Image 1: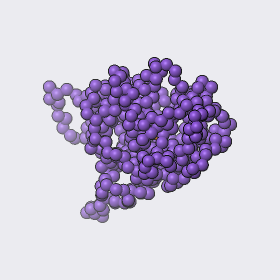
Image 2: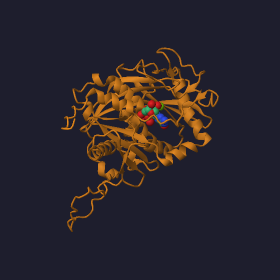
Image 3: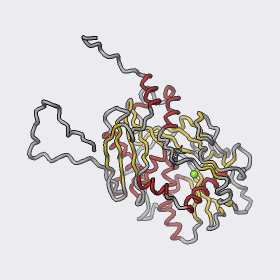
Image 4: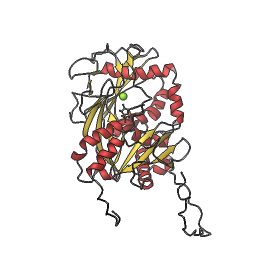
Length: 397
Ligand code: GDP
Ligand code: MG
């Protein structure tokens, strides 16, 4: 914490602390799964409020131009034979990860739609605004043993905004990412290219470039316990043949994973990977995750659909498995912790919530750069909406 409570106003009489009063410990939030194993909390069925697209130059468009269409290979008894390494690195345009976009694209959408939000007047003022990916990290925290996180939080006109900050360790990992890991990341995007078409009813064209600047993002409304949520997440594709064409139930998440051969490999997959897949797709209400299993040569030889609502069954009877109630109860507890910590309404004031495996979530207070993340164009536009009452003229005016 910065020097909060250590400054004394000039002339103010110092009052001695009562003898029995211990200094208040810095607030923190424990993450032990056993603390969060109560009943599954209320989670409102996510509804789509809108969407936006980012193009090959990472430019924002307030439409669905980047949405792709699920187009799996024909199921004629043959297995697929997708070469995930094809085009690497010559047909790869990776996004510049040095650019920290924070909540900017989502805030642009919100600025353009804040007048038409459902939920009644004042709904946004009571809501939490963030990316789906940040909520995914919260959901998996009680089970995470490798990677910590930092989330910056500011309150502005009632709304609580949460924006991830790259940890120093994550930055080092990103800058020293081994070549094989870079290629594996490419392979995940290449799989999407084999499974998706730009228009419904046509076959995928894997001959082009893989450009990870391109994204289609759905903006969703939900509520966890008493926390109204507005969040956005990148969606891989929509299934034109889905039983319901209504988003988000027509959306499909695509994943790749190593081919498995032993029951032990499957068990580990259910315990670790399926938790991440579940958390990511459950939040926005994406009903199916389609996995492509790749062999050591980088070819996808089998596909399997995992319905999001059935993923927990694979670990329900596993003592070392994960539990959706723990994930959601922890997330709700974190959101309450954040709501109770970030009391002042000030877009320049930032509370940084930090977590490292093995410890609790801790918090520190900051002002302005480098942690303030609500951009001036957003703050100024929203401020002009609801100007504060004119200042009472003082006698000397
Ligand atoms: P995910 O669930 O982790 O994939 O993240 P979201 O769906 O919430 O994505 C939110 C926004 O962040 C989208 O515009 C994504 O393109 C972008 N994004 C997702 N992952 C990364 C990442 O690892 N690095 C950067 N710089 N942006 C990312
Ligand atoms: Mg995906």
